[in-house]
Amino acid sequence: MSRNEKRRMGIYVVTGIALVAVVAVLSVAVLKKRDSKNAQAQAANPSYMDENGGEYIAAFLKDMTDSTITVDIAEFITDDNTERIKELKLSEEDMPDGYYIYNPDEETVTGKLDGQTIYTFIDWNGNFTGSDYPEEYTTTDAAEFQKYIGTYEDSQPGMPLFFQIEDGTVKIILEKQIA
Figure (spheres, helix red, strand yellow):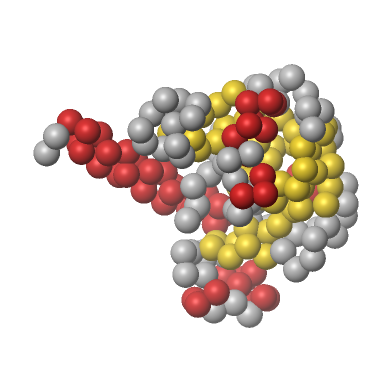
């Protein structure tokens, strides 16, 4: 096995382990979506908790400027959240990859961005890392993140991103590989 093949295999194994860890964490942290349009109130309803106890909400990106971001908040339900699965009458067919994104109606909220907002995303094509393989990339440059978002069809990722919000300001935007 060549060095590149070994590296690729290692990346796939690490990505798989990370995905399993994320699903496990999400299964513990998912709560119901609130009707409130207040971004801070939404942040009190986490969809994801990191290893340091940081709480994130899941949301679909709708629009972004240098100083604001508009999102549609969704509920990220994992297969371990049996109570919520029963409430929504979900079946295994509804969750083939171990999760379900519940978003019955689009309700957008707008949060503030600042020069300290941290953007972490998966550089699938090596445009930012120079890597031949998908790698996580972190920046505080909003323009760089906007350039990345522009690589998606209609400049909107098909999967939710995860947002950490404090006092109405988005502190962290995190893209996790979930499928």
